[in-house]
Image (cartoon, rainbow, N blue to C red; front, top):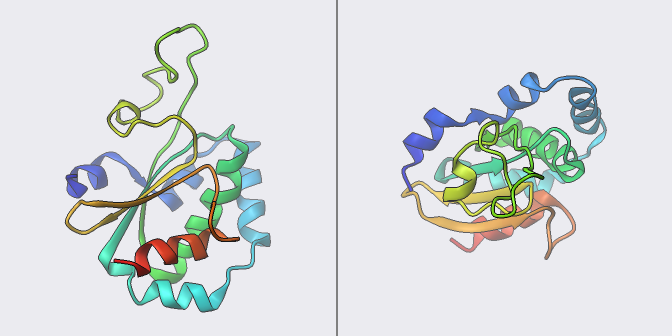
Amino acid sequence: MDLSKIRRSAVTVDEYIDSLKEPFKKKFLAHMQTYQLQMQIVDQLKTRANDFMILVFSASWCKDCSQYIPVLALIAGRTGLDVRVFGGLKRDPLSHTSKWRIPPSPSEVLAFGVDRIPLIIIFDLNGREIGRIVESPKRYPTLEQELYEIIRCQ
């Protein structure tokens, strides 16, 4: 995967949250203010943050996105981890063949096979996908722990 192309096409997680309209922005920011990061895990993530990039597909209306994108913003702020977002995904209820309406959904939803969101994809700096988290962490209780376990194994 060409990470430089992703960096040019997607926005940072902070830019994404800043671009949200109300009432969605308020919801994302409220979760950022109340979430308590597991600092031991975050400190471990920080030691490897420069070796990875995270790409996320999101929509302001998505409940799971409003829960996990703010956590990614907190993690990025504490670790320097590069978190990029393709936002604005919109379902296409009129299509029998396509889940997402393009535009406003970015065309990358097709390239990455986005079915459910948030879709969090972790890449090493060679552009190799090393893991995905779909909707929510599955193996560990927090997003930061799930990310760390994916990165730790590399």
